[in-house]
Image (tube, rainbow, N blue to C red; front, top):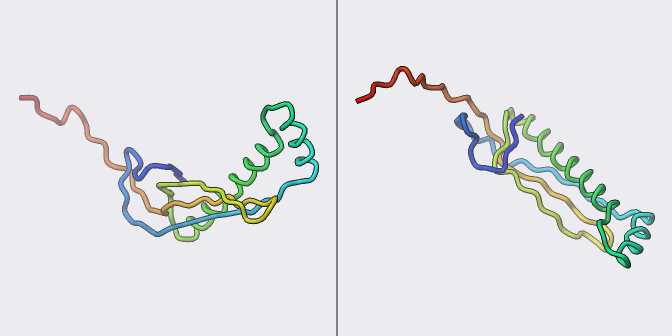
Length: 117
């Protein structure tokens, strides 16, 4: 499955647009991560627990979106975007969406076929 954040894929043409596909997950903070984040806020630096949480959430939302695309018969998803939003205090949604399409590889032209003038 080809996944891109552009409207087209170089070397391919879109044969059919199958529609919007999406995937999401809502994750809550973990008490241990909150305590570690509180200490980190005092001294500064990356909140690695939250980075891991968002990385896992992004992967799960992406896989759910791709499963929806497979069910539609797509071989690619173009114009992919991610967004996050707070759902409640301590919980956030990560949402992935894009356009499911069927692609076909464009025939490559042979440079020796062209005539120079």
